[in-house]
Every structure is written in structure tokens, then in C-alpha cells.
Length: 438
Image 1 (cartoon, rainbow, N blue to C red):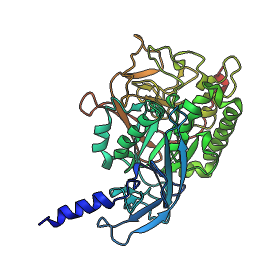
Image 2 (cartoon, rainbow, N blue to C red):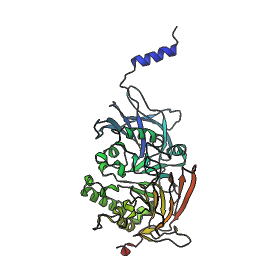
Image 3 (cartoon, one colour):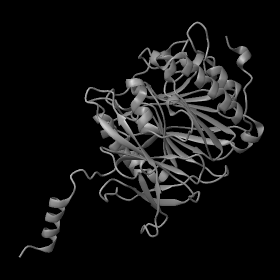
Image 4 (cartoon, rainbow, N blue to C red):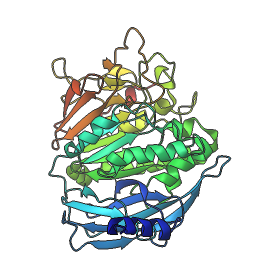
């Protein structure tokens, strides 16, 4: 007599539809308000409904189901690798609450149950962020430690360069990376900006795979959102480096950035979100020994079009009082003294980061990729405070309206804290330095 379990397995084997597909590459991003969460995932073939089932009960009792939409994405490679990207916005959630969810495939197949916590309301709380750039499928050294630390953070900010590269091997490397990062991005809102390694086929993999809280043209690749007492701005540094972007898109981003920062700097908005933090891939400053643009006096991101000084961002960021600028691209960690136009503006000799006279820059691009670690030049410039050439990532705790604490975690040193800084500001706003710029 054949056991019942064996009969059941035979039934599944014989009658299961071979086209039934399981959802994969699941990742989260914030919606446009604390009661929302966007869920994005992929299937290799089309399914009837892009659905997410959600419950605040760990036993998954009385779930609610939300239906979104899917987009057919065909990679630009020779194999025309095709997948369907699903996006479902979950609304009506309670801020500051843990939820459990799963995503639909086809044939009644759902993902495993996962969880997320919604953003808390208002500005009187202390967001905990983890920030890193330049993580690939191969040598993603920081990923296991990040997987173990999910409860330490409210959100993850990936500052450009993913998979190395999304388009490699007809985008299958991108698929593998998105499966790997699901172990973090499926539980924490995964907020991103594009890097240079996303440039293939006019950044099509980046534009299609991610969903940021923006209603306008997603191909422009810039967005801002508020979290606690901070306004965070994500933008593209790649307009100066790839002609297929076109000058008009560079101008559109510049105008958008100015309008966004101008609005964020209004007294009524600065009272609610006093901290303005930017994230862009290529840094304005670095002291690595690889001859990148940031090692040159006329860095394009900093001063704009070479020779013309048009569309540069340093003057704009000073004008609207950006507090902290987060970068990646260089495969190392570097903390700068408060700096503007290559001149240091420390708050004081004993407390350089208390009421600094210029923005504070952090370069954190060593999460781990196939290109390994970048070395530094022998003698650091006057504006370079700390340089660390190993694998790791940066934690940021936005305590309140006056204090932000940051620390660098070394994965090479088994999670040791190898740098820490507290930025203290009794006031926020423009620095009044542009008259000193050339």
C-alpha cells in the first residue's frame, strides 16, 4: 500500500502546472506617507494578479490583500532576458507598527511570509539607518552581517552600484543579486540612488527594478522623503558622465534639486525636519589613489561642467544648508572635516563637528564587490579627517533635531566600530560661504 504522503507528492508532481511561478527578488520601499509601504518583486512570466497579503498578526490572522500592477521588463542584452516586475502599494497601515506579508506568484503559489515595520509619524523620534554603496553579487562581504542586524535599523540606504552589474550575463547576475539582497531589502525599506555601474542600456535595469516614492518620471532617478527629523534627498551623479543622459535631464535634475532644497529650507519645513541629508554615488571629495574625478580640483559633481562651472552642486548644497552629504563609489571609507570649496570650516578646534561651518561629507563605498578595496594616496589632504581601507558600512542614528551620531562598522574586523562621530547643530540653514568660492 502506497503511503498517503507519497500519493500526495505524486499528485503534485503530475498535476502541478509547470508554468506556476514563485515570486522572488522581493524588496520594500517607503511610500509617500508613513501609512504606506511599496512592495516590489519579480516573476519570470506574467501572472494574473500582483497581490500582497498583509496582517499585523504573526499568526497571519485576518489578512488584507492589496492588488498592484506589473510591468514587462526586457533586458537590453542579446538574450532579451524577460521578467515581470510587480509593484503593489500597501495603504492604510498604522505608523510605527510591525506587519507580516507575502507576495503572489501564480497557481496559488505565494512567497514565504516576511515582515516590515512602518515608519513612525512625525519628527519626534530617532530613525536608525544603515548606509553603504558598491555591493555586488560576488564578494558581497558585508551582506551576512547586515542580515543579522535587521532589528538595528529602520531603513537601508544603498548609495549606488549594485550587483556588478545588473546587466552582466544578460541580466542574470542582476537577478542573482536581487535574490541575495532580499534577505535585507525584503524586511527593511531599501532606498537607493543610481551609480555608474547601472549605466547599461540607459540605466534600464535600475529604472525597472526599483520603486521609489515618486509620482513623476521615474527615469529621472531622483527623489526625496522625510523620516523623523530629517529630509533625505537621493539624486544621480551620472548626468555628467554619460552623454546618453542628455543635457536636458541634467538641467531638469538641477532645477528639481534646487526646488526641493528650497522647499525643505523654508522655516516651517526646517522646524519639522531640520536635518537635510543628501545621498549621491560619486563624491565631491576623496583622497583615493585611483585618479577618479573626486581626486581632482575641478570635480564635476562639485563644480559642474568643466570650465563653465554650470550645474555644480556644492554651491547649491551650501546655499540651502545641507547638513550631511553621503557618498560611495570609492571602495573605502573616508570622513571629511566640514568642508566647502576645499577649505575646512570646523566648528572649533576642540569640537570640529559642533556647529560646523560647512557640510559634513562621508564616503562609504566598501560593502563588498568584485573590484575589491581602493587604496589611498600617501598623504591626506587637509580636509580629510579619517581614512579606512577595509570592508564595512555606516550606521546613522538621527537622535533629534540637534544630534546625529554616525559610526563605521568594519566587517574585516568582525563588526568592530572603527570610526564614530557626533554632529551637533544648534541651528540649521545656509552657511554664508559662497562669496568665498571661486
